[in-house]
Amino acid sequence: MSRIVIIGGHGKVALELIPRLVAANHEVRAIIRNPAHAPEVWKAGAEPSVFDIERADAEAIAGMLRGFDAVVWSAGAGGGNPGRTYAVDRDAAIRTIDAASLADVARFVMVSYIGAGTDDVDPENGFYAYATAKAAADEHLRDSPLQWTILGPGALTLDAASENITVVEPTYDGDNATSRANVAAVIERALHSNTSVRKTIRFIDGDTPVAELV
Image (cartoon, rainbow, N blue to C red; front, side, top):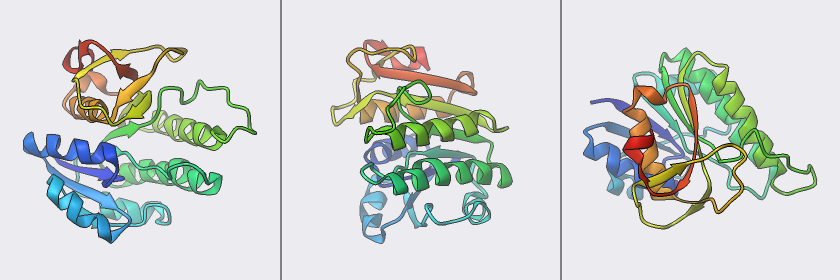
C-alpha cells in the first residue's frame, strides 16, 4: 500500500481517480478547500482534508504532505480570473513542488495540459494566464529533484473511460478531446510505472491501451 495525496481532491479528475487508487489498495487523502465537498470525497473512498493550498506557504504544505509516498496535483483556479489563476496554477503549484522536497515525498504527478510550454498565446487572450501559469509550474517541476511525471491531456470531457489513448507531439493541433476518466486512468498507471518518471506525456483519447503507452 502507498499513501497518496491528491491536491484538488474534489475535482472531476480526482473523483474519477480516487476509486481507482482505493481499488488498488492505496490509502488516499483528498485535499479540498470547501468543507461541503467532504461527503462526496468520502463516498469516492478518500479521506478529505480541508486545506487552503492557495494561501499556505511551503512549510505549511510540507507539514501536510509528510508521511505520504506520492503527490498528485490536480488543482486549478478554474479560469476566468487571472489573479487567482496565477495564485493557484502557478504559485501554489510551485510551493507544493518545493514542499514535496521539504517533506521527502519524492513522487509527484502533475496534471497539466496538452499545450503547456508550447502554446504561443497572445497576452490579450483570456487563456494567456492559464497557459503561462501551467508552463511555469511544469518547468519548476522539471527543474526539481523529484521523481516527476507531467501529464498533458487535451480538452477535457465527461465521457466514460475507454482506457485507450494516443500519445501526441507538443505541436499536435487536431481533435484533442480527452475524457477526465481516461486522465484518471493515466494518472493511476503513471503512479505504478517507473518508466514514466521524469517524462512529459501529452495524450488524447485514442485507440491504444493506457498500459501500453504509459
